Length: 166
Image (cartoon, rainbow, N blue to C red; front, side, top):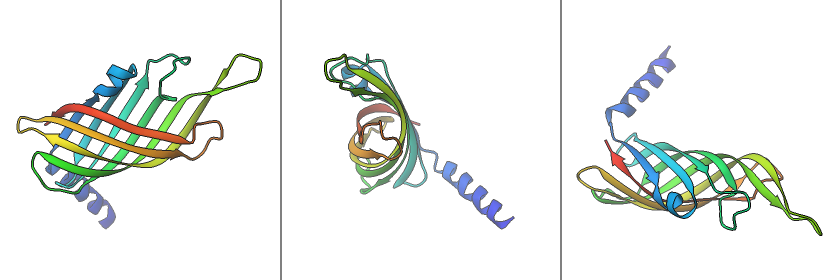
């Protein structure tokens, strides 16, 4: 019973801080025909957790695209500075993805294999928060797929998000 009460208190206290953000990765939308939305909830003024959902509209045969067709990425961020407008952060993430990997064959057309995999990784970035609630964050990092032999080894985590804090 004590454990249930403790978990309930921690859960309620995480909502008492009440800073949340909704963001769209504009770089993916403009450059790669990919849409990625993120939600972030602050536990304290220096720690937050969130999740991103990415979906690619780019064709398989495109020269420049993510290998991932769909990706769900829960993450935890720690903010290193306490400035009001600008802040640096480190992030740990788990990426769960599905996509296509191109297989090159001699004297034949290249084929694509479907894959599903999970990746662990880290990222670093900076965030700007305006007094009115506008949020801009820029980050970059890498993860490694862990389970499938036909998935790409490296998973990029790159973004330029614009959103709103409420």
